[in-house]
Length: 438
Image 1: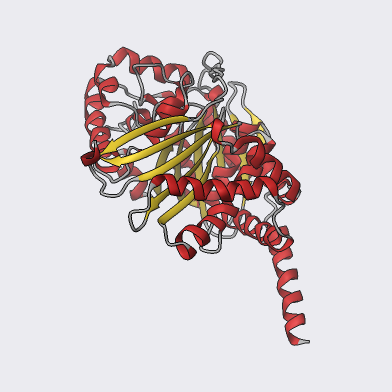
Image 2 (image 1 turned 120 degrees about the vertical axis):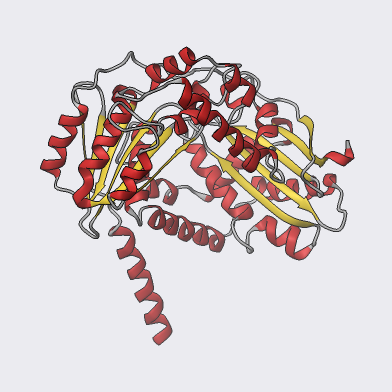
């Protein structure tokens, strides 16, 4: 009886927790096209000011890769009213923190301040948008910073070029074929005028969303936003790339050699639809079934039971135009890579043929409920989610609806989507090998 009561209590508590995660927000546009989203939360006396620009590596041109990531760094250099090298000093002296990140599809800047310093964050982001100083000194400085980052995080890291190896083979036409960090020779070859033109084209109010979230007074913040952002002129409308890849109808076999590794890796990558496609949600669930945790199918079979793999993973890399569904494995005990391919394929065929069990389905639903709660458990997480849903889906309220999408995915859909996309004739099979094997 006690056990039954406790189980019921925990179930009710979980439901209440999920319902309490409903995110209230207000959104509107300024005359210059800047989209504004406000989320009030008085839980703690902090506020985040963030700006997401709809520009990433896919907006670059061949021979000029790395521009978006470069600007992630360059736009901290200074503005007409913020001296060179003073950005981080201003933030820290007002009790704040800040950061930025870039993907193939967008660039995101944010500051977190005590709530009484929200105006500092708004002023700084408006300065970044309106008055950035882009000169040769800043370009040369950040060029060296980016080169060092690439050396540390990519070139000298074991398996650091794995994503590059996948992208170059999986995409032939689309800009997803190069990495976000880009190639250093492209940045070296770029002129100052090219950097200025890139800034003028993409870092404009009508290509951005401003999110202010946390302990805020909406009326006061709205006035600040109008004062700091309202007079920034709009730029020309940004037209996002619309480049289609030819379907993959025969397995692509490729090899990549890395001087920083001792163990080979086998990688299978399937080109999948945009993250806005319903099937992308189903592919998320398939990756969870295959490799999320030690009880997942691939880990349990290849690592625990058969002991033929040291590591195994299935990753659904969802992006705005296309997704990449990737499985990979590191062999154990000199297991041939062909054997790992065979064993992974067998597990995928099971998904394509048989419905997952009711118990596995229930576990899957619980995992996604937990992910939803975790993603929206902080002001930073909520702000990022709000910006993403508006930028990519045009529906900010997906922050409150997306969990229902996962909840309504059926076992039949999981089977059918696996059968639709995860077939050997639709993939890249990459052997990522030690340089010594070449």
